[in-house]
Amino acid sequence: MTLEYMTGFGNDFETEALEGALPRGRNSPQRAPYGLYAEQLSGSPFTAPRSANERSWLYRIRPSVRHMGEYEPVEVAHWLSAPTTAGGGLPIGQRRWDPVAIPEEPTGFVDGVRTISTAGDVVGQTGMSAHLYLVNRSSEDDYVINADGELMFLPQEGSIRLVSELGVLEVEPGELAVIPRGMAFRFELVDGPVRGYLCENYGGKFTLPERGPIGANCMANARDFKYPVAYFEDVERPSTIHIKWCGRHYVTAIGHSPLDVVAWHGNYAPYKYDLRDYSPIGAILFDHPDPSIFTVLTSPSGEAGTANIDFVIFSDRWLVGEDTFRPPWYHRNIMSEFMGLIYGQYDAKEEGFLPGGMSLHNMMLPHGPDTDAFEKASRAELKAQKLEGTMAFMLETRLPQHLTDYAAGLKTMQKDYIDCWKGLKKRFDGTIEGDWS
Ligand SMILES: O=C(O)Cc1cc(O)ccc1O
Ligand SMILES: [Fe+2]
Image (tube, rainbow, N blue to C red):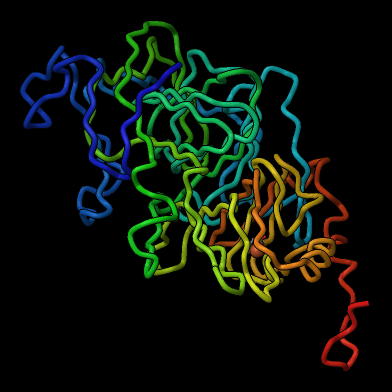
């Protein structure tokens, strides 16, 4: 499918799938064109400051009160919400997993979501959860609305198509897509089974980070974010809408597709971004900066500089530091770090952290390069070196992340993960050079 997109992060867009469907000069004419219903979707309180105010006006075949019947509660085995503190009874610890296989049995989107960790409280609208999605069939007449937060999709294997109320996004490994809180969508496979990471953000909406002294350019540039044009279906078939609301799942049955928005305008909309468009900033003489220099999007918590979530990537870049240990330093962090690898190798862990795998370095638990990475980087000739063909990411939250029973019980959890640091031996021998034998 060749899709058309509009560009610019957070812009105020207007788009119509039929000429003249968008009312001019007003939001609510007495009768909207084509007999459409006008409806506002508010992603922020009406009174939010202008910089944070988000809403869109939708012109649709039926108002969304016609896209629902009674809501029936349903059980969903693996899509959980914060707080999940049982964690399979596992004690605290640094954790890493190999990739989880995509199931053989037919698995659609909702059943394919596997919650790995949760942070904060879904009802209090703080924190996040980190999920995998493992899906082998497209949804046909089944739609999803997540009232609990926006959803950031990070395909790792296979491309997906998100057909939403406001239009269609196709997303491949190396790209991200965000579906706003409360927006209906259908999840489709483009070509075969898919695996990906999914961040559910209960808190402040993802936005571009401040750049401070970096100035107006580099990092994620607003013009590279892509928004869909209006797309609608006039389809009358038995359909279901699955809604997740305050951590509970419900289903409602309707007789038509809810994707019936013929025209829309506003700034509350889904978007996608190619992570390879990110222009990394780094140290060009010495030292390893904090990874916040690689922040693509941030979910603010209300406290300055203290993110509900920072979404950070480690993508292709040059390392040029002189007299510098170039990989990440050993550290402990008040923020909790969930990491995934979309492709390639991560420089702090060249072995053992696989594409499709994940790791969790929780609040104040020490971590850093494994023994091999430390040995190599401590002895490497420091010529300019390009890290190529790599895309790791981190979801860093101010709140501790709790594992689910599912994550704790995964066969792919590496029981010996902490042994990756076992070989880091004592080099202190009282001499200023230390023992590098
Ligand atoms: O722990 C990690 O691998 C992520 C990370 C990378 C880095 O360059 C600096 C700090 C940090 O937490
Ligand atoms: Fe870290």
